[in-house]
Length: 93
Image (cartoon, rainbow, N blue to C red; front, side, top):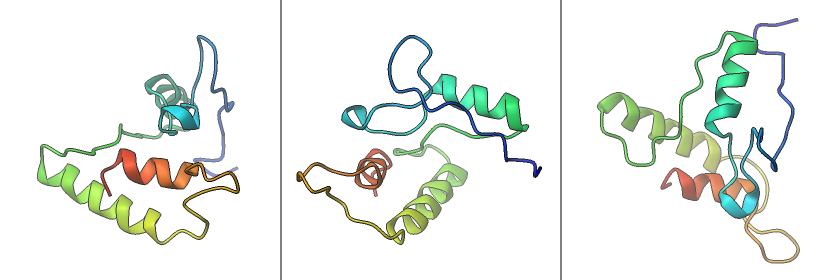
């Protein structure tokens, strides 16, 4: 098993939720990041939509470039934004 191969449960409701539902912008919650970091020895950080440092500005640019190039629609069949669209919006891409 590789270093980051231990996924966490994908819970979007209740007290111990680890991911935000799509209506709230999608993405991991602080609790989800902490759980993932503990399980995998990672250092996931919160999104940086309004970076205060050059390092965070670089993270934002890198995320936007990677995520914008991902395949998939920005809206689903019902016209609602997909998780991809919501994450790009959360990062101000």
